[in-house]
Length: 104
Image: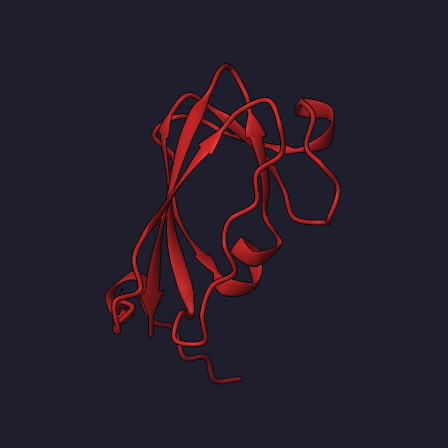
């Protein structure tokens, strides 16, 4: 079996053509990010302040029983498919989530 492994972070660049980052203000109501454009393949997700809960299955996150906790300071690369399915709600207070579009 052959495997081709790459370091994804080194293969991505900011999305061109004036595609800008989005900062979500996440509070007690569910927030969804804007749909990513055709040039974007991945996004860099950064939880700037306070923790948030996120779901990807179409249900609304309400607490630890229905959602994945992302702590303040979380950073990660997500596929376009994953971010387009994401639904956020605050964890321990109003939060900010920054979404930076990337292209491969």
